[in-house]
Image (cartoon, rainbow, N blue to C red; front, top):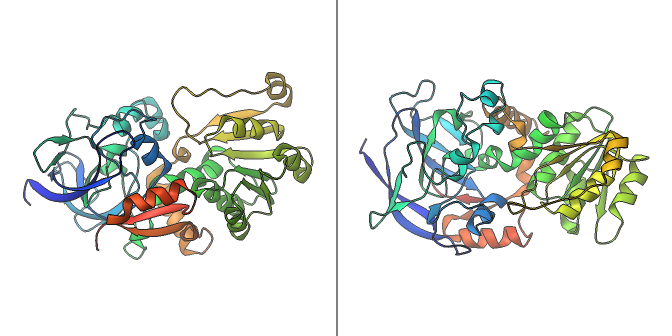
Length: 373
């Protein structure tokens, strides 16, 4: 294979600027890297907050971190993957630090530089624009808003060739986060109560998974009625429109004193406070919503202390992707995890429309169709 592959990439060149489709080139894989022809990439809230520089990833950059595609080349140190494998791309991690060695790759000591630094572990970019100038890449160890992406073998998850590859990209981040928070982090139990604060893609993924886990009181909150209607279809036993009702009071009423488990996915400190206040005795709330760096939140110390409440930060659903993503695919195939009801497909040229629709709440989970199988 040629050392250089010509690609088309959606480039973010300035803070808040629209994505620009550009011709570019990407180098061949080395060491334990794989080159993936991207079929489709989900669009996530994190793509937008990086575009808007809430997280200071250097620009210009190629974003995208929910890619799915087919391996077209492998580096010399790749052991288990091969050309032709279908893969879902997920977050990067080092594989050798203390958290990684203990099965907690989502808390890798190198998580931030491997996913947000804009360069690879060698300090270099792999993509150049049409003028030969570097484009920051390796976003979530992939930068999959492009026709081809480089990934490490460790974060390229092989999936069955029978699965709908164009649908699977969001399992690498957003869907994995909501589902994993319920199963891996909170460990929601049969017969328990669970509240999702926010009914976007992450929140609704948690609703579906709470039903799989056996929770019998599942509450979804939001301000958009269409999302609440979908939540009921996906497993919510109760819904609360926070524009119309006192959320804390209503949750306590429904649960008979407070929720056993909850997940906050909006990134709004006021909503997190509601979630903490509405926990029952020894209840636990997971935090996955990402506000701007440095954002503070408050809670009543004695309420948390005397109630034995827990507040738990969660990254990527505490997932071990190599096992968890295939499990989610199997749940989908069985009809028990219908995350396809969250998505809407967009052509690559319509990527800015996808971003606008996502930010306006029109589309829960955009998936950008980039290439063919």
